[in-house]
Length: 342
Ligand code: FA5
Image 1 (cartoon, rainbow, N blue to C red):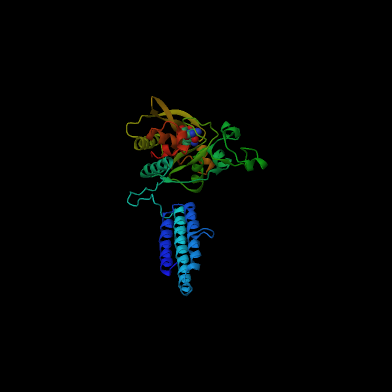
Image 2: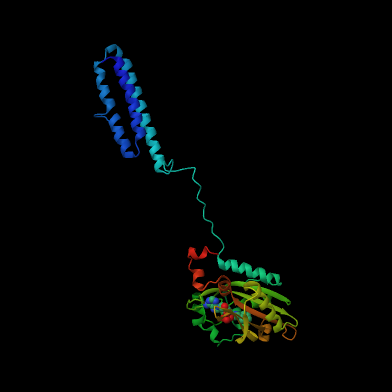
């Protein structure tokens, strides 16, 4: 074989191998192409190498050198093709990706409807001069019961009606002194505020409360209350009714029907239940009344000098009424199809 023929078959081989590697779409077809050109037993390069014996001895040096260069060039092309396929596997250049298409907007979360409601209620009450106060969710019987005029033998203290903490049960009677419970009402914050401050007082407290109530359309074992407390000289029941009415008209709309029903709470006297009209029935949204003189005495206020009113409203029920939500459980199911609507 002449040197000329030998060299031109080497050049043809480099071009053919580069084309084959380029055309490979996965590692299997690339491997198949590698064996075809670089295979030790019957690869195309190997076949050409066998022709070396028929080349003039004086040309063999040149032929050997070009053979090596060819081998390096084919190996380099193979390495490049391998890298290209490896990158595509790792999500690199994707042949189906069209950079001219519009992008996909990342989903943004938003504030839960109950948190939105809490912010709205604080804003309305803030405009009426009420500032926000907070208290702990794990309480002692003094703040949840005793100071609120709920004596030791009162059924509201029954372990079946409260979430007492297991740690307390070791040393103390459930419900007795020294026990701890998840607060069952935000009225605890009334006591905490009055223990630390002197009248005049105008506060609201919004937070979670816990009761072992069976869940249904209007009850949940964890829910939120908005507590209100107003203490000053000469505060009357008329002030209470005005504040609740102005609040309801601001939050639920001026056309909302609300009513006050005589009721009983140990910490208010007289006491009322507050209802709004919804879907053909009256729904209770809170309790209220004039602060009982026994509560003032428990926190060291003189009931002859001061009077006040307090109220506790169910935040979920207010939110449900405003947005037309018919089942409280929807608020806590975590179903995004529901939550996305707010
Ligand atoms: C109280 O909790 C009193 N502390 C309210 C109060 C405060 C009266 C200050 C006087 C002075 P009651 O147990 O009725 O009252 O609860 C108040 C409101 O919480 C109810 O009207 C209702 O709207 C809401 N509520 C009660 N239980 C649940 C529950 N399981 N799920 C959702 N909301 C509830």
